[in-house]
Image 1 (cartoon, helix red, strand yellow):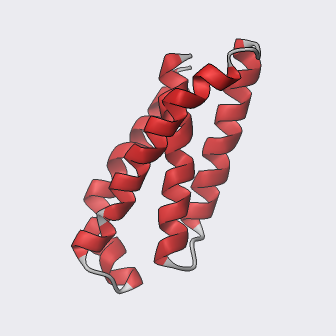
Image 2 (cartoon, helix red, strand yellow; image 1 turned 135 degrees about the vertical axis):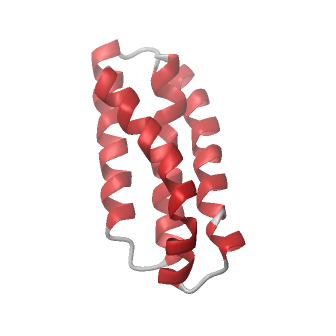
Length: 103
């Protein structure tokens, strides 16, 4: 639980410090790079709703699904070939966040 909380916190807040570097690397403005933060928040919102859909599963299974989703999103973000792939990966990474703290 502690490791999951730590990884979600890092995933949420690290983007703020990396915005100038992300913008430069992908050739977008810093304001456009900020969409990676906004779309993460949208994923958190969807993830909070997702918990009501997953409530029939045991807590262990919910946590395994969330950890797998976080890992998939993190891997996709790490090797994102384009800015929009990074944005999609950030959305995927946000989904477990809203559900994790509810569970």
